[in-house]
Image 1 (tube, helix red, strand yellow):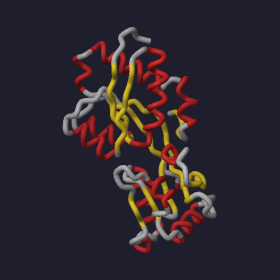
Image 2: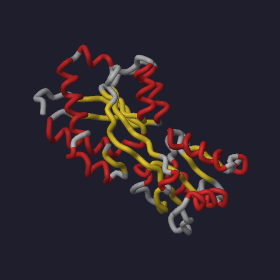
Image 3: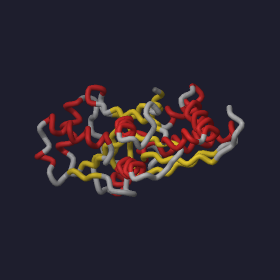
Length: 236
C-alpha cells in the first residue's frame, strides 16, 4: 500500500453507493487515504463528467464508462471492471409474492400487476426491451412507472405506488417496507457490469494517481469479494 495520504473524490450511480461506502472505509483503515463518493442517478453522473466536473474516479455501468472514454472525458484504457449486478423483483411488505421462477411466470406477473416500477439506468432500458420482446409493451401503457430522482424503485414499492418493482438487488437490500421476491430467472436476467474510469487530470498528478490506483487494486482484490456479495453483487 502506498504511503501518500489523499482525500479522493469520486462519483457513482446509486446502485454501488453502499458498496463503495464500505470499501472506502476499509481502504481508509488500510491506507490512511479517504475516498468519498457522490452517488446520483447514472445518467446525471455521466452528464456531470461530460460537462467537465473533475473527479478522481468515476464508477458507472461499463457502457457508460466506455462512452465517456470514447468522448475523451476519461482516460483511454482506464476502465476497470469491479462487479456484476443482477436485477431482482420486490413487492410491498406482506403482499403475496408472485411466481418468478420462469420467464413465462414473470411475464404473467407483470401483466397482472396494477403498476410496475423500473429504474432509469441500463437495467430499466433492458427491462423495457424485454417487455417489447414479449409483445406486452402496449398492454402496459399507463402502468409503467419510472423511478424519479431521489425516489428509487424500492421506495415506490414500499409506499404502494407500484405493485411490482424491478431494480438492482443492491438497491433493494435492507429497505424497510418491501419483500424481495427473488432474482429474475437466468433466461431473462439483466446483468450490469459496474466499472471504474479515471480522468485525464490524474496523468499530471502521479502521487494522487498512485493512491487512486491502490484504491482500484483494493476494490478488485479477493479481500473485497465478501463485501461485494454482501451487497448483492458478484466479483468480476
